Image (cartoon, rainbow, N blue to C red; front, side, top):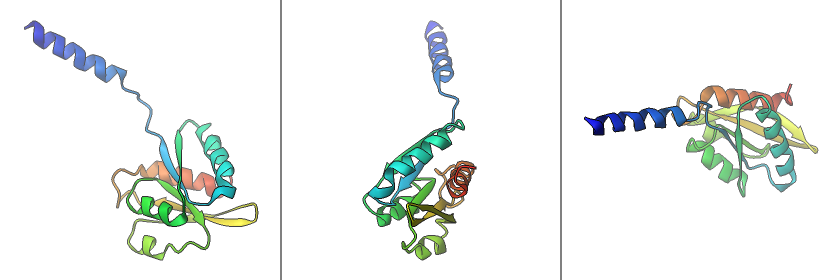
Amino acid sequence: MNRIAVSVAFALLSLSCQDARPRALVLVDGSGPPHSAWVAARAAQFEAGGRGVRVLVVGSAADAIQLARRGEAEVALVPESTPIEDFATASHGSEAGRVLHDGAALRVLEVNAAQHPKVDGAGAKSLAAFLVSGGR
């Protein structure tokens, strides 16, 4: 009988220790080194609203698209010249808009939560809209 009581107590304790906050959103940055500091600053501005963002800097736009295609991120940021037709046609996500930084146009891609269950759909939409709007 004591074993059951101890097991129940441990189970309740572990539940009460879990963090109630949602997990950090993942922003995969394939925009290139000239934009990395700016992307990190934008993520920090978004986090000030209460939701964490993990910025994953990758070596190329193709790497960013690949991670987004696998549902490993909510949002991807890539140069305007990056082809996204296959990404969009396969319903992995869509272009939420474009943003300018230092004269370069960048595409903000929102990953489709219906296609990728690990993706937080509301979080993806919120972060993408924030990036496109310039934080307004």
